[in-house]
Image 1 (cartoon, rainbow, N blue to C red):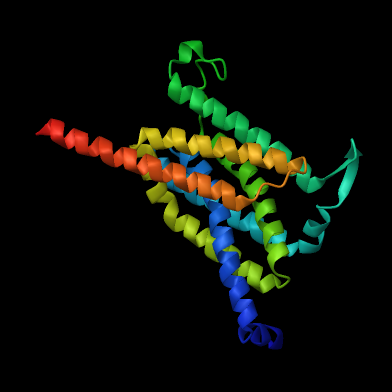
Image 2 (cartoon, rainbow, N blue to C red):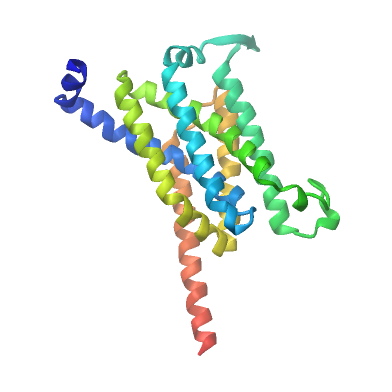
Length: 249
């Protein structure tokens, strides 16, 4: 209790908490975009449950990883070396997660550009029938694990106080939970946004792979590019709506 009271009166701790919450929310948006796109493939009455289950899984994984924080920190220690570059378990997780994201985003882009299942080089004509709640949840949990490891290691790099990390993670996941349905509905109602979101996931996947191989890419540049792209798409949507209103008259 004395430890918590000491933290509560320290302004540096509050600054770290605010910064960490913002960082966790931003990192969580990648996770949320993936969840929104996947759950929109389910029947409408099952989407909300799948979203909540996926985000709940993200919270459980993050808190579980915080409970083993001493082990998590060791994930950055090299386990083998190839061509003078040491690969850690974190690197391997990022590479595998990035490859999965690239594959999944490419597959979804293919289906949106060429929805005819007769000539589907990725999944065949039976792919639509294999989309089940179980397969969606498994894919969400796999990416939850990748994003959770990245999220917790970011938190460890910003503060040494576990209570601060727990509060930041809980707040970030609550924001994800509140934003999940509006974001999913928006993505579902605007087909062009789906392609843009998939492009974001493709870029994030490539960044995860690059970081797994030791290339550090400042997140600020990445999110600035995503924000600029989203702004341009927003202007295009406004322009299309104005043209539609004129045609309707």
